[in-house]
Length: 366
Image 1 (tube, rainbow, N blue to C red):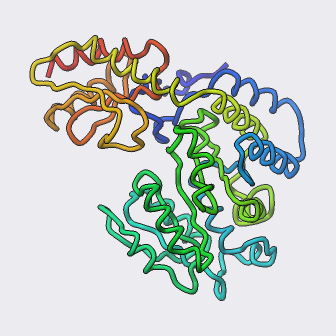
Image 2: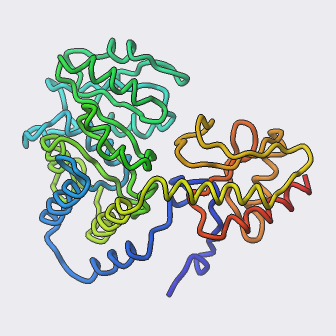
Image 3: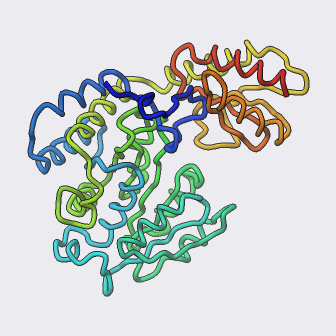
């Protein structure tokens, strides 16, 4: 069996969180087994997409569900769905959208420009509002016009309270609202609450908090909108054909969601808090370093995971991050606004001990 080692690629301990560029999260054994089982047979992909969606919608308690090729793909397809609806002719004409509602009110607060690019690549036109620092509800509502296909809301950078305000402000004009909630699981309540507030489509990453295949996303919403997403996606000959999700990933995500729903937020938080606390316990006191665990009002998003924070001068923090990444074993940690952040969400059981011991050696060398 070939491994990363054969390719000359180093593995590492991830104390940085569910970040896409370093692999998202790790899949449980039952998810891997489901994917292996799915790989052993042929199925009709159209049927699998539909029935997997129905199964997920029923399990979660929403009208419709669709498995996309990651959250970014889910956002792109959600935007497309708001332009075409279920009209096959409109689906076939993309990215040509002249004469259709094709404008998307979108804030500048989220730095992930690939969401902006993805919408534009499919024929959407962006009405950008606010600044990189903030956006007001009034600015969002003011951006809505006769050609608005939807409003895009970045949960995390924007609040649930603002989402409610935007939905209320656009309801009379029947403007859909798409929520990018890629990294906003847990809490598990987000799977249903955002739709209950009036959002039309909500998109989650499959490979972050739910610990499914990294190349999957979960689009939830009103059935008419989810059906429009499906018509624009693979395996149809549509603009989303290249955003393919294989039968293995579909079964993997269904299994991951099932497992995720059997767990609780309380169990997750208790585990992460214990691991974050254990890191600080082993570190003890290091001269010149302030250490603490934050549970709320954290300087980084999402903020549901208790994290260990070590306040360090920027230059020392940068050096520590590099030493850890190049150590044995290599460890990835996040550099925050005030120093180093240890995120236990992606730590295997017991890895907090290794992280703490090596981190202590590094701190004493600074």
